[in-house]
Every structure is written in structure tokens, then in C-alpha cells.
Amino acid sequence: MGIVQSPDLVYTSRRPANGHPAWKFSSRVSVRRTPAMTNYKSKRVLITGGLGFIGSNLAIRLVQQGADVTLLDAMIPEYGGNLFNIAPVKDDVRINFSNVCDEFSVNHLVKNQDYIFHLAGQVSHIKSMTNPFDDIDFNIKGTVVLMEACKKYNPVAVVVRSGTRGQYGPAIRLPVSEEAPSNPKGIYEISNLTAEKIMKVYYENFGVKSVLLRLTNIYGPRAQMKTHHYGVANWFLRQAIDNETIKVFGDGSIKRDFLFVDDCVDAMLMCAVNPKAYGEILNVGRDDPTTFLELAKLVVETAGSGRWEFAEFTPERKAQEPGDYLSDITKIKQRVGWSPKTPLDEGLRTSIDYYRKHRHEYWEPLDQTVRIV
Image 1 (cartoon, rainbow, N blue to C red):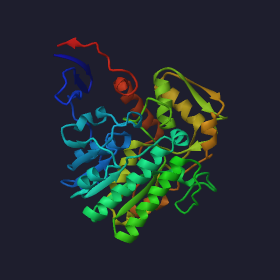
Image 2 (cartoon, rainbow, N blue to C red):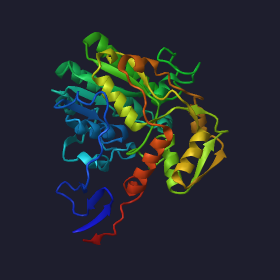
Image 3 (spheres, rainbow, N blue to C red):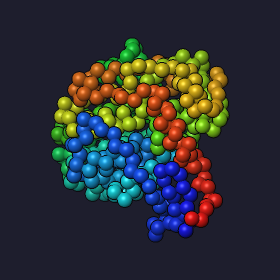
Image 4 (cartoon, one colour):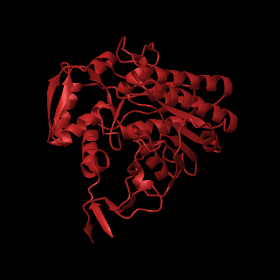
């Protein structure tokens, strides 16, 4: 049998009956310990969008903690669903290949779940301005379908949703707290704000416990890496790894707080089990900003490859650029006890190592050359 090996992974060229690739891991993934570490043993968990960037990282952590995990994913090509993302736990999760807008599928899947992490949705800021219908379908209708299913079939489940800091729109003052007004500039952000308000209605009127998270710029392993539409930091990583030139728009002085995906997962796990988070809007980000220029320089330095140059904003990005943003995470610190643990340079280094090992699974065709062992 032909195989391709890497230090931690053996990919077999033989495919099982379902036609999907098979993986065999030669060593267990490391376990990140959090205050929520013991709360998920034997708990039933559903993750919508579970084969995507954040969903897959969350799934791996939950399996490590002893949860019974089901993943729902429509596998829409440009949205980042990737079977390789769950390779470390592929034999320990259930996968349902369906759409979050499929009422009958969702009605069935929510039954008997203890926790539901609602991560499915259209996630491209740029695409939302040229084709807003996916945002309306997946972000708004999909949320209604899920909440109706919970109301009818599992009103005691806790539902955690991943919104976006873009729901605020341009910041009136920094850092941005949950009390700041919402004035989003794009359809993507508007659809997320609408989904959040829908979940708030189901909490206040029907008692479906929900946690409404507004995530900042998440980066790290298992992201959508094929286009520049899905996360600036991860796109910078790809360009540096490929020894290409990173485009820094404007003068590079715009500030963001970039959050490593493991810290994001920590926040989700901790919020889901803490009643003080139920019904609340909570920022999930870092309280120390980085400019795009600083990020580009650090990525190039950490990768040891690539370069950067200034560039003019594209019309699409200029139309949606809200300016500086910095999360005020005081509320989540006080209610849940969460704060980010991963320094930016450490998170970038971990991400670069991951993508250099597995680049062909994210933005290159799988090498068909195999060696016989």
C-alpha cells in the first residue's frame, strides 16, 4: 500500500467505501487544559459548521474532554469545510452532511444534545456585498431553523453562537465594549447582527439558553486558505509560507486584535457551561492591538520567508473597512473568567508549522507521488 508520511501523520492512498481519504495518526494530539476541562465528559454536543475552521478545532478539544460530538456541515466548497480538519478525531465523531437550513435534518440533530455550538454560516465579508443571498439563507434562516428546532425538541440545550466584531461597524471609541452602538457596514455583518437578535428573542421569550459571542480576527490552524476572503492573518501566513509579497493596504496603521483559535475555543467552552454567560453578548478578542504593518512584519520574520509592501485598498475592502478596532473584554473576564493566553508570535509560529506540514490539504492538490513501504 502506498503512503505519504509526515512527522505526525500517515496518509493512506487507499480510500474507504465512502470515498473519503483515510488518516492514521502516529501520536496523540496534545491536550490544552482549560477551566472547562472536566465539564464535557459524556456530554452530547452538536457543532454546526463542524468541519470548518473554528468548528473543527472545537470538535477536537471536545473529543479530548470526553464529549459525544456530532458535526453538521454542508461542505460548501468555498466555506472551508475540510475532512482533514478532523483527522485526529475522525473515528470519534459523527458527521451529518446536511445544511443548517434543512429543517428536518436540524430537528433530528438537536434532540438530546446538551450543548450546541452554532458556527455554520456564510463568512466572507467581500462575497456578502456581491451575493447577499447566502448570508440571508445561512446566517439568518439557518439560525431561525436551529432555534425553532431547539424550542420544539430541546429547549434545555445551551446554544453558543459565533458572531463577529464587525457587527459594531466603525468604532466610536476604543476599546469597543458590548454597550457600543451597532452600525455595521456590510451585509455579512448585518446578517450576523440579525441572527444574534433572533437568538436573543428565543432566550427571552422561550427560555432557550444562548450565549452570543462577537469574535475578533481569529487565526490559526485548519482555516480556509484558498482565497483572501476569509481572514487577513491567515492569508498573510499563506503568502509568507509561499514566499510571496504581502499587500499591506494604506499605510498599515489600522489596528486590530488578532486572536489565536485555541483561545477562541477556550472562550466558547467556558461560556457554554457558565450560567452567567446565558443571554449575554460577549466580546471575544485581545486587549492589545496590532497594526496590519506590525502583523505583516512579524509574519515574515516568524516564517523566515516572504516580504511585504504597501498597496492601495481594493474598492471592496475600502467600502467595508471600519478603521481601528480593539475589543473590550472586561465583561467576559468578569462573568466567565476567560482571557487570551497565546502571545501573537507564539500563535503565528504554531500556525506556520502546521501549514508547512499540511499545506497540500489547504491550498495545493494532494501530491499523488507515493512511496512504497
